[in-house]
Amino acid sequence: MLRSSREPRPRLVVREEPISGFHYALSGGVVAVLLFAPLAFGAVQEWAFAVVEVAATLLFVTWLWNQTRSNKLEIVRSPLYLPIAGFAVLALIQLIFRTTAYPYATWTETLKYAAYGLVFFVTLQSFRSDRQVRYFAWTVSAFGFLLALFAILQQFTGGGKIYWVKSIQYGWIYGPYVNHNHYAGIMELLVPMPLALSLSNRIEAPKRVMLGFAAVIMASTIFLSGSRSGMVAFLVEAIFFAAVLFAQRKGRRPALLLAAALVVTFGLIAWIGGSEIASRIGKIHEHLRAEEATGRVQILKDGIGMARARPITGWGLGAFPIVYPHFRSFYTDLFVNEAHNDYLQVLIEMGVPGFALVVWFLIALYRRGMHRLPSESRMSVSLRLAALAACTGILAHSFTDFNLHIPANAAWYFVMCALATRPAQESKNKKRNEIASC
Image 1 (cartoon, rainbow, N blue to C red):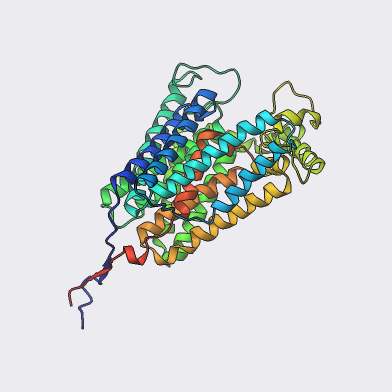
Image 2: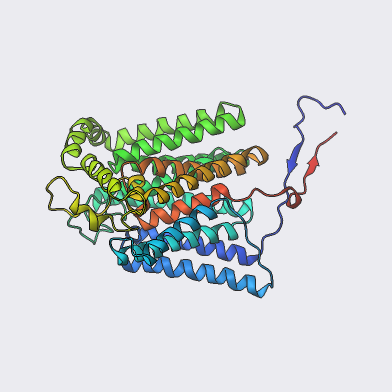
């Protein structure tokens, strides 16, 4: 039937299958763990991560109890299960056959990765609808904005103390983190969500402006924290997000809006702390020379030697700080706890098999995340890409730091992996009703 050019085009309305209160409660438990971990100094202290481990176990047991009660086993599948399981088996082999240089450290790290795996699994089982992911995105936006405001306020009034109370002997605090690079890491994981919501036509214009403002404030704190690696990682994830959105929508609007957000972000940065940030960027060459002598570059070279010494079995999950002094080629009175390159550390600790499993995981992550895009709504595409962009940012940062060894950041990363690869709403669960005035 003919239709006037001024009339709106027919659109498809997706009616989602109702989600039980149990799944909302379970997803709420995941969110509670995620909100707690960054505020507890990144959950790096034993008491804080013990809370995360116990909470992850309880969430899994709750899911299992509900499955038992309903007399059916319903598991949301994922291509990421196999590499995760393979990594766990490899760690157990190191423990059973005593190929690890320090069994206690390997056992402790295995429990940590088990907790991340449980959080990943429960996230996939509990986030059953696009509506839940939208609620999650709004929660992330609010939490990230408040965390960024707190970080800025503490920067100018905290006197070098976390929460205005806790002093530290070493480190460069920002927000609730002892290390400013790890604060940048958590923001890399959070910023894409408000950005995705601000690009949605389904949200009213005033709310989109508010979300865009929240994203700008959050992104600006990455630069204000002074983390050079964080700055680069944020730009990488922003470019990834804009490029894929541009390709999917075949339009300029998303890319232009993201470019505008970056311009506003840089303007805000210049106004609040431009001179200090310019000084940090201007000293990159000097910083690299220092790193080459006694810093990350030298640790990288030493780490390659460690990997060559045990290329197959590795030194054991979590054993890097114990073994590294035997390979260290420079003097320092500081304790080198990580390799400052997550990829190299996997190769050192887990050998070539462990590194191959990580590569498998990453390939499956991007294949599954990108494969689902053409068949989904714009909002769903934006949120899935936001999760994938968050993973991209932290993975880029992992070349020069160890964000994935910070429990809070690692937990957020695995949740973003779950959201990026969660099954799309199947057609049988989507009763498409065409609404058109013919």
